[in-house]
Amino acid sequence: MRNVFVAGLEPLGHRLLRTISSAEDCRFLELFDYGTIVRPPEASYPPLMQLVDEGARRIAGFEGQENGILGYWDFPTSVLVPLLATRLGLPGPTLEAVARCEHKYWSRLEQQKVLPDWVPRFQAVDPFAADAVGAMTLDYPFWIKPVKAHSSFLGFYIDTPETLEARLAVIRERIGFMGEPFNEFLAQIDMPAELRSIDGYHCIAEELISGGHQCTLEGYSWRGSPEVYGVVDSLRTGRYDSCFSRYQYPSVLPEAVQSRLRTAACELIRHLGYDGGAFNIEFYWNPDDDSVSVLEVNARISRSHSALFLMVDGEVNQAVPLDLAFGRCPTFPHRAGGHNVAAKFMVRQFSDGVLERVPTDADIRRFEEAFPEAWVRVLTPAGTRLGDLRLQDSYSYEIAEIFLGAENEEALLQKYSDALLLLDFQVRPLAPETAP
Image (cartoon, rainbow, N blue to C red; front, top):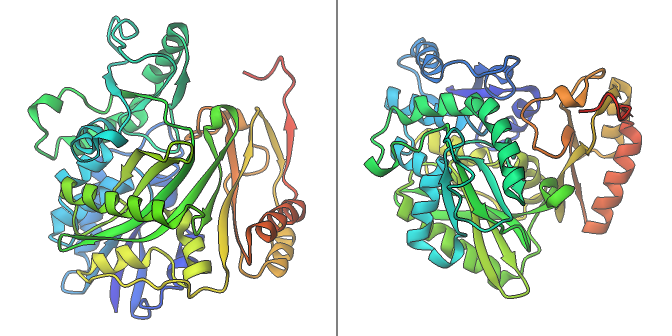
């Protein structure tokens, strides 16, 4: 048996992993609890290098066996897994290559060298500087976010200097949540001298590129040869179109556009020196002028896409990093699933309130009977005030995820409407005087 140590293993993830066709000889073991490294109950993550030490000790107990480390969540998992692989001499990308993907400002500098016309204007921002507002050179409006964050955490649309001043106050208060562990990671690598001062307590401001069609390319690099195996569309909603409403696969982009994106993604990954790992790269395509912009590079698969690939291609994307974890070249099927189209829907609320009802076990059984291919994950327990949730984007609250497959988009959207009725989430809005 192969031992697969999974960072942040949880029930749905375990079910998905058990579907992998090449995993019959795999024993999936929890390396870190999901609540510790994905949604920690406290106001901070445990010290990063402490986690590395704990993980290394756990795996050392299986010395002499065939061991691999698997991770598919965003930060800190995205750096924790390569740190452990490096410590233990297991396959994986170099830490410097991971940093060139994960440090949003450093990544922008590298993207600019390869795809100069696809990168928006940007600048580093020190939110603690005495005159951070006065130091801005970008024209308003723009977006600002930490150099390391995810799920649009502390990402803000900035339209005036006054708005920036107010948002910087929020950022200063909360940036250490990810900034501190990210600095622990950066301390393990040899940063370029000109970037050493731009640490996890800094932000990046970027001119707006949110117009057009957003998509994500998933792939891997094996022995210097990048390969893209899927293109997923990202559909947005809400204020400033800043919130994801669903991820849908396969992409409906013209094939010629997808081909350009695949070529660019592989060129960028080679330039970053990223090898032996999975990746995903987000792009915007503007159909009005056929222009393309790079949004960001991530040194991991997207767990949000796993069930989509299973329903359409017949395999979850965790199969790719699983192969890589054992030094094997991945193989991935194409359109071998039972559905033509699949999506992950994010069940969101756009104002503060109390989540008074979540699906019962009976509700979920009826849901699974109605949609045998489907998966649902409730993210928030009943009784929760949405405004108390952490790791949310700046303009909405995500309370559940629903994964569905169908023969076409029309049928897919109808299934989602029916699913919401079956699951019956109920939120009690807060009176204006009690809302923040």
